[in-house]
Length: 224
Image 1 (cartoon, helix red, strand yellow):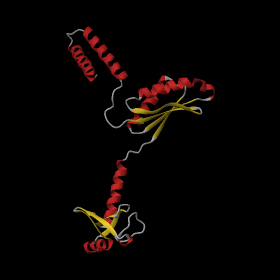
Image 2 (cartoon, helix red, strand yellow):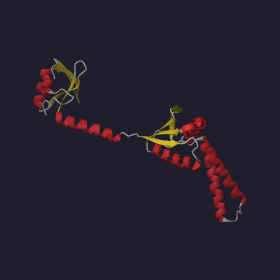
Image 3 (cartoon, one colour):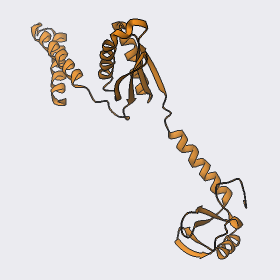
Image 4 (cartoon, one colour):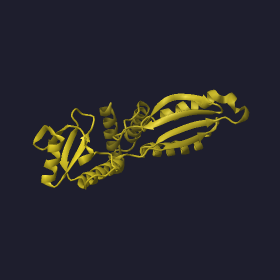
């Protein structure tokens, strides 16, 4: 391919400087532009300016059509690798009940695991603005419950009749357990172990459960 005025690179006779730096597998050298054009013709390729701001401009002897194809292919691959992040909204009332809270918390975890950002807000309708402190407490609890899945970008802030909290997803990897969850799992393991110790050891099933509970407790201790 020869000259093309609709591209982002100057090619062949479009390059009007006195000299250029040719780069290739064997290194680089500074030659006159006329000499570089002669080399391109003799090799059946194009002289393509790839770095116009360098002194002198950097050029390559390549098949321009192939070069454009590789550039487009590389850009497409990069676009495919990029994760499209969306902002998912979670709406609360200042007096959201426990069932509704847990339902929305579950969805927020799913959004964050998918790589999306979560914008949670409490909407104060009419005189419910008097409960803005209650709304702030709710959002702070929400942030704490999402600790393993995301990080808070800013503390809850009131904008008009809405109080917002933004949570962005953590980087991919194994989610780190919060201290609150570790303590809860330890208590559950201790309770299971105690219950098994009080049971009849002659029963094979109970004995196996006691062994499993002890191993779970040991594992939790080692994680600390």
